[in-house]
View 1: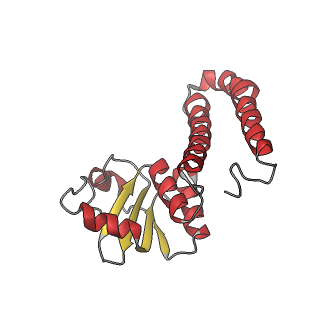
View 2: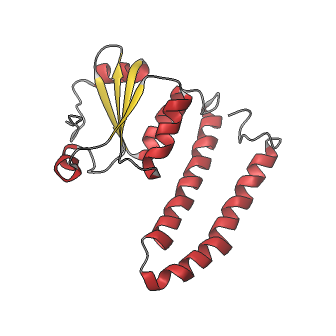
Length: 176
């Protein structure tokens, strides 16, 4: 069981926690034993070839009040200085890891474009979840139809254009 004590953000230790994030020694990603919001974080940690472990809560109902937003995933980053910083929210975790592993471009502009593209992908995923997965049973078929005929084709066409504009090399910006 992982001991969680991250219901608030300690302000008095921000320098030490910043150092932990800058020079991580190990990572622990907490999420349920399923894909969903924890999948990309796990993939990035594997890509980064760093020391990391995947953990699940022992009793989520009892533990969620000890997290910043009562949600997962959480990323615990233990720095070389022995301090552990806790990051919450899928997008924040993914951006931190992508930057740590050199996947967010080589300058502020490239990083911003990559974050926009990532945000677009997260938005289409959220649209699917809201319209189809969590919709009333009688509305699912219509919502899925709209998603597959309007939302998804627009997203695909837009992203294909950006990929083609970069030489169709499988990356959006340069080789990132």
